[in-house]
Image (cartoon, rainbow, N blue to C red; front, side, top):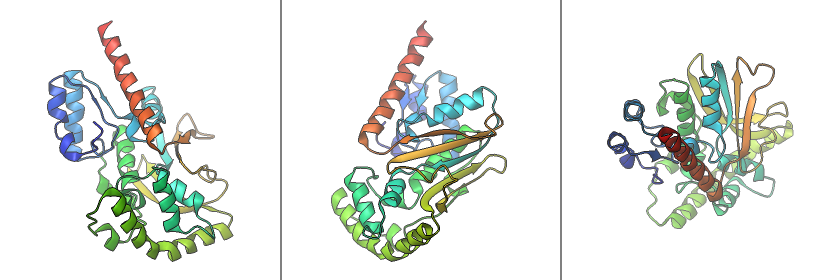
Length: 278
């Protein structure tokens, strides 16, 4: 299901009851209404079907499978942190005295890194959904509204209706984003003056159940300091990984990596099917 549509996700329960396996590279199903999520988990178990959505978080990176391995082998996951937005990583790696915030966003769109509505990236909504998917894997009953989120997009731009083609909407949003160039450049310069880098950072505290994502200036002691322009990074702090976290890091933006992640999910499904027949 490449639609990433809530309307399509409403059919998952029915499809699973008919014995249909599902791959969802989008994160709307996994981060959707909590009641529906629990219903899908039950339908998957009761009908012995596969629901693969590894690629919904980090494209081709093995983030969810790593988390499941930790949990299933009895490790106590205490904290998950990192950055899950390739667009944010690209933008803040490319900002400079000569490259404004809106220009860096334009470059990210040109690289085909952005969602069809780039506001989903810049508001933190896409990262927020991924955080919900991760938290639910840990058994936390978390919904989107439970994640504290800093949006970089003002309400007037978020609420504005853009009615053109995807490219026309990109152009119109970029024009509106120019109003953020001055305040974002101020934050960038403040971070640079302190020897820091701006990163859109998330954190899941398992004990408290609190989740957040926000723009932070990080120093060189933070694993996000050296994050490259199209990368995601997820660090797992657990009862086993005490002296240093287990880190999954790599490129996670762009259509090639998305396709690779989907194909990996398909291979997992195929292996599960072969195993069930043997």
